[in-house]
Image (cartoon, rainbow, N blue to C red; front, top):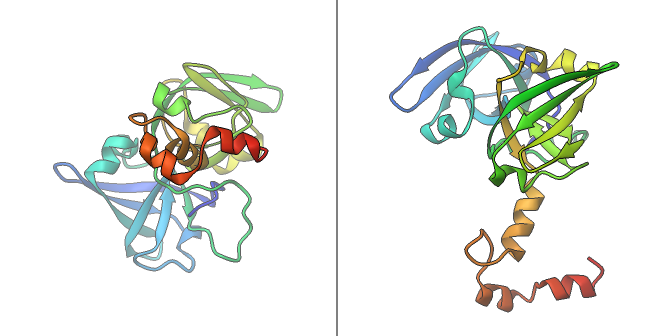
Length: 221
């Protein structure tokens, strides 16, 4: 589990590609402290398992499923990547609940300066936008951000200078692909309450659980 607060921007040092897989070598320093083989490091929003450690790098295997759902396969040596170690049990929860299991990708469609901030408009598929709500949380390339606006084709976030300075967002331009992870709470709610055939429980399952829209309204939800 992660918070979406980037600890370090590392550099992709090498990519060894298989037929439908890859091994990434990522140069970094901060996230190596206390890390051991088998630990998780979120890389541009994707939870990866450390397979080898060096003084200034780690390696991670990327399987077919991850390559097909994320932008990791588009990276080349020299690409900056956002890095975060898994959240410690005694740490501050400064962002939001992030699993590192991305839902898909989006595309930067517009950049607009607004005094000291920069607005990013991200176009995404309807199956992702259904879980994105105004003033809710979204994870973009591993960065916990607040949604400022959303419509049926895209959503907007406003980035402060600090976020620009400590992440790889400054390297993203119009047309760039970004990894997206929607707030997991919305997906669980849909699964419990949604109609059968649309990711939710069947009528029989809903009836047996006792969790219905009428029940929630009756109890103040």
